[in-house]
Length: 98
Image (tube, rainbow, N blue to C red; front, side):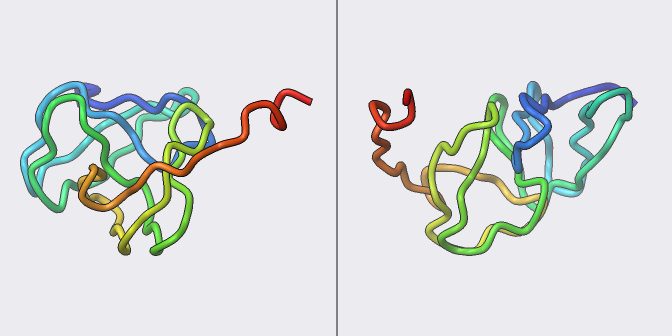
C-alpha cells in the first residue's frame, strides 16, 4: 500500500490527504512504524482532511497536535473535514505562552 495521507501529530484526529482519495478508497497513513487506513466516505480532495474518528458536534478538530476548530455538525470517521463542518475558534495565545 502506498501512503497517500499524512498524520502530522500522534494526537491528531484528522489526516491530510496528499493525493485525491475517491469515495470508498483507502487513505493510507503512517503512525509510528505502523501503516493504518481509513475508508473515505466521500471524495476527499488533494490537501484536504479526513476524520480518523467520529467527531461529535462541538468537539475539537486537532491537526499538528493543535486545535484548528470545532465541529459544527457530527463528522463520521472517513468523512471530509472542511469549512462546511468545522469553524475556527478564537484562541488567547498570550495565555498559552505562560
